[in-house]
Length: 205
Image (cartoon, rainbow, N blue to C red; front, side, top):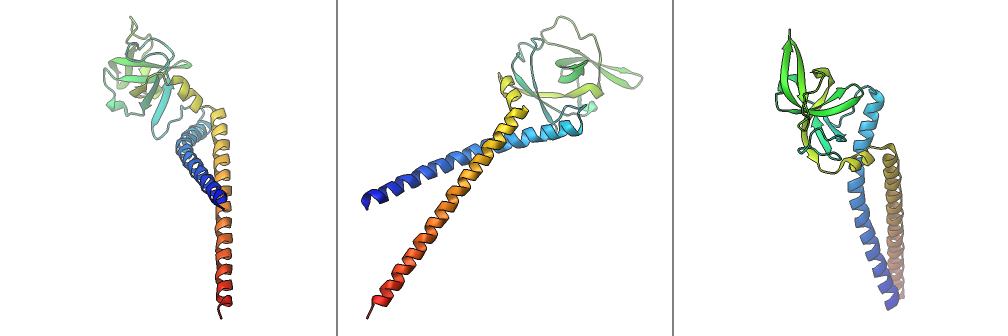
């Protein structure tokens, strides 16, 4: 009897630990799934526009043009911003042909009411050849996550979304089965105790 009780207690403790791990995994996985799915849906709805997450976008730096402030391999977060809120000295991400560059505004040019931005990489000797129109601005630089470029690329991939969805399904399925087993054990225990109580009442003279 002692061994059975001891085994059941150890088994219950293991289930509690697994439950805590599952909760932690869900807390980590669900936000990533929501983030990834939002970007994917927006990219399908509007394929010609970089998808954002509540106005925020992430890019991975691959060039050395903004060293030492922003290094290759860094992930940066930019935010959608109104044209009137852009000033000289701001760092912006913008379309340049088929690429997205992240450079600093060094001059704002107003030509007959048409605003364009002259930009330059902090590590470049010369200013960028082309002026940037507001319609090509992806957002204003907010912050960088040092060395997290590869991690962001992995998070935003379709393969990661599928893997995380499958993992979430496995976790929820496992936890549901465990909860059902616990419920069945409680029902059996209740029925057993009820039976013992009835037998003890019937046994009384």
